[in-house]
Image 1 (cartoon, protein in one colour):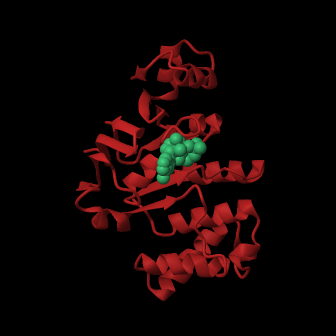
Image 2: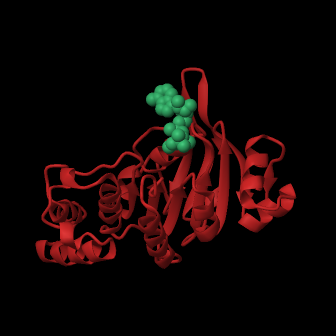
Length: 245
Ligand SMILES: Nc1ncnc2c1ncn2[C@@H]1O[C@H](COP(=O)(O)OP(=O)(O)OP(=O)(O)O)[C@@H](O)[C@H]1O
Ligand SMILES: [Mg+2]
């Protein structure tokens, strides 16, 4: 059974259809890259799947439950690292982590242990006592990701996690994400195509809210006769081809 199944999922603002009748599914454990140019509808789609935004039409089934009727059952099992970082700036780095772990049901002791693990994984141990507002932008993003992962989500949504990270941090983050492969289902949006190319099992391309392509990097390249993934991506976004492998 797919872990996520979209059923004619649609979001409209007045006359503008920003997510248009989407129907596709994501397999358990899949690393799923959601791509598309600015305004394609990626963040809107993710917000609906996480129960932050109500669809105008359609539904999605996550972990067997509907986002329309049972979103409260879904929420504890998923997490999101949003495009706009969502950290408590007046708490320290460690306090942010322990706070989130606590909300998701960890005991104080467990929260401490998990926070230490995350600090190490994201190279933030040195900063554990610093107020989050004093971190650099890239460090705030890393903290934001650690706060997502500390809850052991079955589905982890990452909306442009590498935006603003320096080259080394981005590479390290890719390494961290690669380690999660197969353990957690990951839905990733990014404008770095090489990131999707390196990590994703399945690529989904949206254009103006509609599904334009779904398949592996190789399938998309083959079907657009492209030399590179970037060439394939641009051809698909230009509307030259729809690719459903
Ligand atoms: N509250 C809103 N009211 C009206 N239009 C909205 C609203 N929120 C988003 N939109 C529109 O929906 C479309 C999709 O926006 P969305 O943020 O989902 O795009 P995105 O694919 O995440 O883009 P980016 O790559 O820039 O993050 C855009 O045209 C945007 O202007
Ligand atoms: Mg976005």
